[in-house]
Image 1 (tube, rainbow, N blue to C red):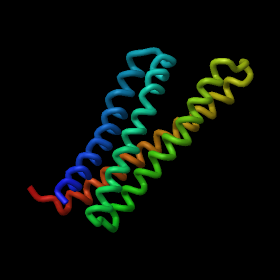
Image 2: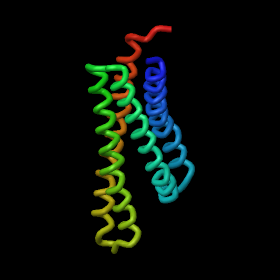
Image 3: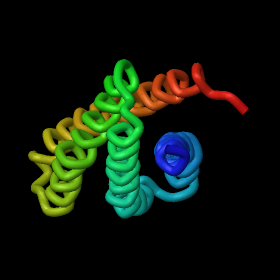
Length: 149
């Protein structure tokens, strides 16, 4: 039991920590320091690893829940995190990446349409990231209610 509690807590704090660190430290610094195109390239390189970390942490949390026998609202918070992360990483991010590639070779008359599509996807991605963050904080809060030192 102790091992699975440890795996659960480590996975949850790694997932939340990566979201907070990337969203509030890495991305703002990258976009403030570099020109927009180069910053977008760097963030595009980071995103697959960022989402993979979430998938691994989500799977380890699931394993821990199954082994510990967790039920209730923790499942709900975890489910929202997995759904939001999966949607952002497996659906939204690939579409946004494809639009970014199209922008490089598109004629002038298509650029504004593609940019509008990209902005819509980016906005949805940011909202999903916030949903995953707040669901993770909710899960952490649910965990802390029974925590003892």
